[in-house]
Amino acid sequence: MRQEIFCRMIFVTEVLLWTVIFYPFCVEGGNCDYLKLWILVGIPFGIRKMQIWIVPRKRDVGSTIAMLVFQMLIGGIIGGVVLVWKLFLLFVFMVLQLYKAIKKLIK
Image (tube, rainbow, N blue to C red):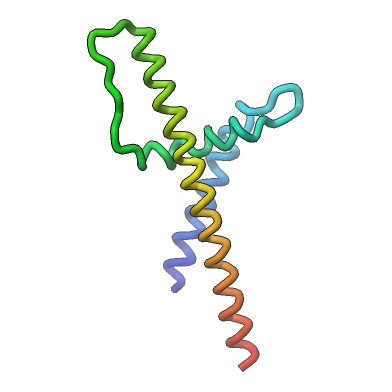
């Protein structure tokens, strides 16, 4: 039980760390572009989930870099969805743990 809570807190710490790292890149004119932040924070979580990397053959450097950027964008979108889903599951887990603790205190 304690190990599961510890692992979930590590996940939250990782998300906060990536958010702090990428936040300065998303602020323009004092306003934060949250879509860009969502994609950038999702990259570390989405690259792990990608199954296929497109490797261009017999192309110039420009098309290779463009393909890499496209793959990072797709990985960021996938990771953003995974991140939102994991945070939702974390919220549900915390609500259930709180419910169990209150139920235990009442009895």
